[in-house]
Amino acid sequence: MMKFLVGLMVCSLGLSCSSAKLTDHWRNLEYKTISPKRVLVIGVTPNLEARKAFEFQLANALNAYKINTMQSVVAFESVFHDAKRTEAEIKAQVDTLLSVGYDTVLMSAVKGVNEKASYSSKSAKTDYRLRKFIGYYLLYQEALFNQDYYTRYKVYTIETSLYHLEKVGRSNLVWTGFYDLVDPTDMKETIDLYVKAVIKALEKEHIIEK
Image: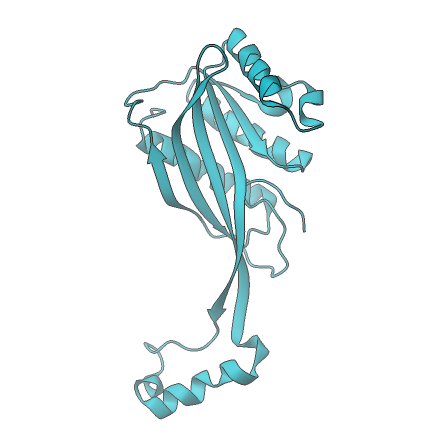
């Protein structure tokens, strides 16, 4: 299975991705107002193609709000991604970002993948037989004998967090949001849906303004 950011994985069921749903979020009340001036976007994924595509589209979306935004694949030295880095090395990278004017980091990562199943039967609203026990049991016994009774799909949980960079390598979490993506099969469509959902949330939090 290809693992990459914001549900940008190709699934086997052939279902289309219909939405990117915000399921939970948190806001640091110490930052009642914040106006990012220069933002670095980071996609946490070993898949370089997916990371480039996601970061490029999110950067373009923020640039449209007249926010100077850059992708990590451009801002970071290539060797920074080649291996795990120590806390001191990451702090040094943050100091470098501060020295060239970055004040905000927006980072996204896949937090989990869950397999779900939906029923392929008729709804009680459309089949009057289900109002009777015999009709209900007759229909749903298919679940015992018919392997096609269930449609299985995967739900990807994506976390996006916005950090405010401060001097001496410090950073504070300003906002984080969790999203569910259902069986995304098309990378371009999935990126588009997810970027729009993130932008909408940032507008609602007045982190960016229309």
